[in-house]
Every structure is written in C-alpha cells, then in structure tokens.
Image (cartoon, rainbow, N blue to C red; front, side):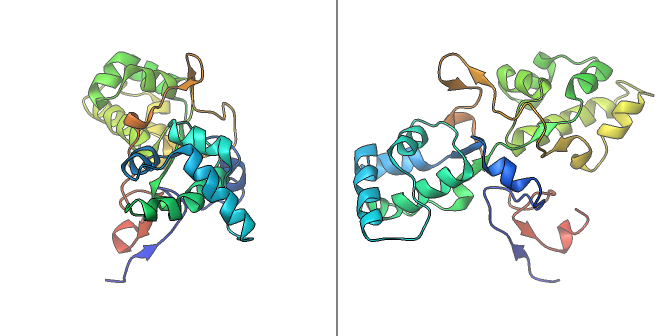
Length: 237
C-alpha cells in the first residue's frame, strides 16, 4: 500500500483554489485549543500582545496577529484563516515559555461547510430539527442553523448526513428524487464548501455564535473527501 499523503490547511483540506481564498477571508475558523493551552501556560492576551510587539520588532516574516485577534481567539470566537494562522505564530514563544506544546494548523477547526437543500431534505424525510438533533446527539440550535444553510464544522455535517441516510434506509421519503440525489454514499452530494450566501456561522444573542468552543471537534484525519491524510483507502474521494 502506498504511504499516506499528508496535507495541511486546518482540521480539513479544501482543494478548490477558486473557493479557498473566499473561505479564508471570512470569520469561519476557530483555534479550538488556544484558550485551554494558553490558560495552562498562564498566557494572557497582554502576554500575546507583548510577544507580537517583539516579533514585529525583530522583523519576522511570518503572518502575525495583533491584539484584537488575540482577544477574539481566547474568547472562543471565529476569525479569518489568516488571523488564526497569525495567532498560532504569535503564541509559539509564550506557550513554549509556559511549558506547553505549540498550536498547529490542525488546531484550527474550519466551519466552512453547509448542506445542500437541507430544508427540502428534512421535509422529504418528515423530520424536524428536534428529531435530527436527537438522532445526531447535537444541540438543536446547531441543527436549526444547518437547516437554515449556515456554516458548520465537518463532524456535524457528516453526522446530519449519516442520520438522514439512516431515515432514508428505513423508508422515510421513499420515491423522493431530491432525497435520492442528496443522500448518496458520497457526502459531497449533501455537504458543500462554496461561496454562496449565507457566508457565516449563525450569530446568537449579543456577540455570540451558534458554536462555542465546547461544541467544536476536529474532523477525522482520514475517511472523507476533505481528509488531511489521503491513502489508497480514501482514493475514491
């Protein structure tokens, strides 16, 4: 068997060069381990700001994020891809001083996915957001956002795809052509990355989002079309 190919972007890999720049420019990325890692290292936003100033003074060429981004990331809020990468670069020295391992791009959870015709799929299956949420063990607010076509992390999109396929398998929506087209064995027929609106993670309350840090999980490294590790077992994708 050929060795796996290791790709780098976030917790997933988006290969389409026409989509990726647009995705990267939106606040769709969480540095999921940053708050806990910085807490363990006793690294504050002020420490990161000082590190940023030192690194800028040294003339470092890496992408660096400033104070406003430090505050957002440590508060568990989404930022652009460049900002997430800049936070990771700035945090390396303070984390090392605090005896913590560095953050990597795999610590970035990319909420860049949305579902194709999710409201029509749910209607065809005669399933509401509550049933789907229970079947996927997800918070109802996340499923409601998914059905409204807001952006999701991959693990949630895959969970909804899998649960909808299980309903289809027991005969829900039999004969519905739209279901047959969307709920195939290829998740890309139901899950997409694209540049169509809505181009956001659903906001809730004041300065809040449907996702908090506690909801976020990195995608599996293999076994799906957006995997970081590609080998013969994933060649079909």
